[in-house]
Structures are given as C-alpha cells and as structure tokens.
Length: 284
Image (cartoon, rainbow, N blue to C red; front, side):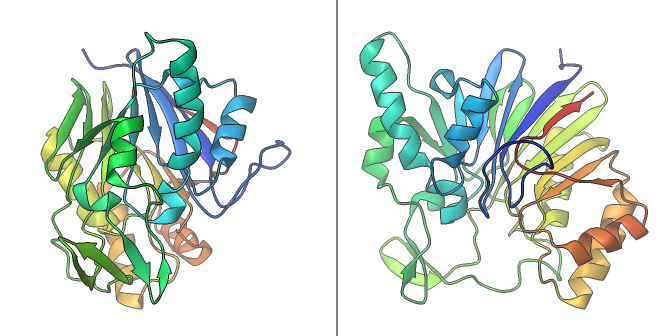
C-alpha cells in the first residue's frame, strides 16, 4: 500500500532558508524517509550536507539508500566525506550494514570540462568497498513505491541539446550529454513525487518518463534542479508550457533553475515555492 505522506529535508541547496542557521554551497543534497526506508539523494561537493544533517537530527549512519542523480562533482563529491564516518560506524558496530548506493553506470566514470575534472572523486573500487553498489541504466525499484529511473529517454527537441565537457566511457573521452542524469520517483496515494538533481536530461523528458514508469499522471511534488539557469528562449517557452499543462500540485525549484525561469513558470500558473538548505517539506 502506498504511503499517504512523506517528508523531504533539503540538506544542501544554493541558498539557505532565511533565519535558519544552515551552511550552503552551490550544490544539492536531499534526504527523505518513506515506509520505513531512508534515502539520501545526492551529496553536494563537501561535508556540508553532513553538518546540516546533524543540525536536523538526521542519522546518516543508518541510511538504507544513497542515490546519485548524476556524476557531476556538485552532486557526488560529498560521497567521499560520507565514506569515512560510515566506515567508523561500521567498525564500532560490526552488524551495521552498508547502505546501498544507486546510480547510472556512467555516474562514477571520469568527467572533465576542458582540463578540469568535474566528476566523482572516488573510484569505482573505493565506492564498492564503502557501499553496496548497484548500477543500472534501467528503472530500478528500491521498494514497492520508490523507483530510480535509470537512463532517461530524450524525446523533446528543445532539451539536452548541448554537451557539458567530456566523459570517459569505456576508456574513450567523448562529448558528455550527461546520459547518466536520472531521478527518483515516489508513489503516494494522491500521485507521484519526482526528485531530481539537475535535470540535464530535460525536466520535460524526466516527467514524461516518470509518468510512464509509474503509470501515474497525477504529480503532487517536483523537487530539485530544473536545469533552467540559462535556457534558450525556445527551451524556456516550451518548458513553461509543458509544466503548465501537467498541473503539478507544487514545484520546489532548487539549485540550477534560475530566477527568470521561476518567474516565467509562476506567471504561467505553476505553483512554484521557495527552497533552501534547512527546509523541511511535507508532501501529502
């Protein structure tokens, strides 16, 4: 039976919630619990998400799942900061199981922009030592009502048109269209929650695929980066029309969305709400 509600904690976003004493960085990390399972979605690029989790009284040592939306450093490099305290906790309690780390296979491969490395700073072997590693290009159900979408089909002609640096795939550097970019979807009684990191695959592509995989058209929440910081006029117009038509109950646009895009979405009637580190969102 699907859960009736869930709580999402914003551990890291580009900004913090006014009057709350939380650190921030231009990155993303979210935490939620659902039906007895705990999920960490992205890790920022430092240990700041760990500090904020401690302030929120969230125990990251007992995580069930860690999910990487994609491999860029501002979503994955905090993983190395989590490995050490988890190893310490495991040494103190030999019965403590490793959390399962879920990602697209390319999310842990090297990435670069010009000469700068912009990918995850842990090797595949190091990740496999610290976590129970599960890599999947296809949708992976983590419970009866929580799914990792895997590789998102690119259907629109206005999204995901430009590579971001290069990725090393099977030993070859190639233009990186961030095919590892993915999302999580949670099924609730009243519809689905879509949790995204940067939406490099295109938020419209992502929403369409989430609806297809879950068989659910009703959307009660979208939270995460929408990759609309500097969209082309065509991308912005088409995305606004799409988002208007899906009639999501609420959208918390984080990280890489951009003020202009949020204004245009709000003008079109999309229920955009503010987000920031320290925010707790209850979804019913």
